[in-house]
Structure formats: structure tokens, C-alpha cells
Amino acid sequence: MLKKRISLLVFLFVSLFVSANQVQAQTIPGHEAWLHQYNAAMKQAKAEHKPVLMVFAGSDWCKPCILLNKEVWNTDAFARYAKDNLVLLELDFPRFKKNQLPAEQVKHNEQLAEKYNTEGMFPLVVLVDEDGKVISKTGYKTGGPEAYVQHLNKLLHH
Image (cartoon, rainbow, N blue to C red; front, side, top):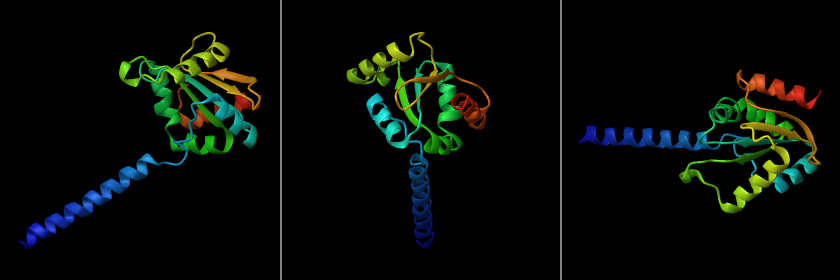
């Protein structure tokens, strides 16, 4: 009987510990910073005097987009950099039915692609100033978040 109670207490303790770690992993600072509306991004950019990093991505079909997301965007190093230096705007173009965006978001993303991604490149990273003027364009680069941050700094301060 005592062994069952101890086992139950250990199980409950481990369950609570795992749950707390899962919650913490889902709320890493900076990872919730991606906006999906151009007007909101520009408003924030003007208020904070920061450039906007727009990324045109195919989150469920474009291998370089998926790699950029995994190797750079979803890292703590990039999140820390972005928090102080950028406004983030994700413009996704998923293909799989289960990942489809609401029609209004699709239209919004397509309108921005007509203006900023006329070449239809994926991924395309467009840096714009707080007035929406293009500073530079780039894409996926290997080397991880630190190398990508250096690359962005060169583009922003050329």
C-alpha cells in the first residue's frame, strides 16, 4: 500500500514537472512576436522606429522556408535580436488543405506579394523601413541564427 502511494506521488510530481516545462517551452519570449497584418506591423514600426522584416513563406511545402523557420526564426538567439531591432511580419502561403489560412488572410498576403514579391520567390525576406520603402531583399542562408543576424545587420546598415 505504501509503495503504491509513493509511486502515485512520484508520478504526480513528474507529471507536474513535465507539464510546467511544456508550458514554459511554448511561451519562450519573442516567439509570439510575429504579426500577420501589414497595417499592424507598420504601426508598430513607426511607433518603435524599427524596420519591418517581412517573410514570404510556404510553411508546409517550401524546404528552404521550413529550414529558415527551424534554423533561424524559431531560435532564442534570433528572438532576442528581433525583439530589440525588428518588427516581424509573416506572410504564409501554405498549400496543404489542413493548413489553409482564412480567405481574408490569403487575400492580404497575395496583395503584399504583388507589391513586394513580384518574382514569386520563396522564401523571400524583405526588409522595409517604417514607411514601407524596401531597404533590401534576401532569402535563406545557412549558418544558423548568429550568421543570419550578421547578414541582416549588413543589409540594414549598408
